[in-house]
Amino acid sequence: MKDLKDHVFIEEIFDAGPERVFKAWTDPQKLMQWYAPEGCTIHFKKIEVEAGGKFHSCISNPHFGDCWCIGEYKEVTPYSRLVFTLINADENGEPVNPGEIGMNPDWPGETLVTVIFTEENGKTKLQLRQTVSQELAKKTGAYPSWIQMLNNLQNRLL
Image (tube, rainbow, N blue to C red):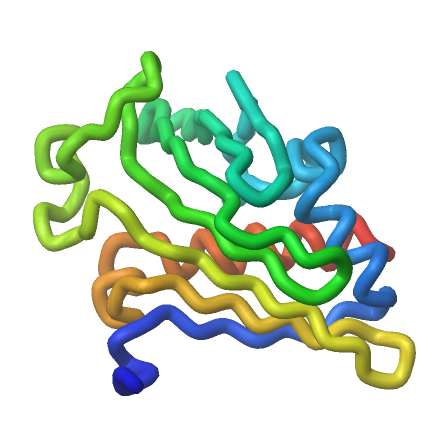
């Protein structure tokens, strides 16, 4: 197993049960309410939340422009586990090299995100892992973006 520093790892406790938190990740209408960093918005050209389902999304940032992504849901296990790829893409859904769109050239074009939901005394312990070094994710803003999005989710669940 790789050293945890080789991956993004974030753990949060939500004051809601796993079913409610999981639905916030899998219901497209709920996802659009929180799945973008502060000051940004997200919209989906396509989203099919099921194993093998694909998505094509755009996070719009008023300062840095649009960031398009595509991905595939590898695993959707209700109320316990969500696994999906994140691939940098263009507006047409074609993969792009992160360095060619102004991102850090060390950023991998594709990462795998695993989100685990565990019930603990009526609350949800959420563990998020992404297959990119935590150091690079902090340097590029990806790590703080996850923190901001999870804070958005936390506030939506109140």
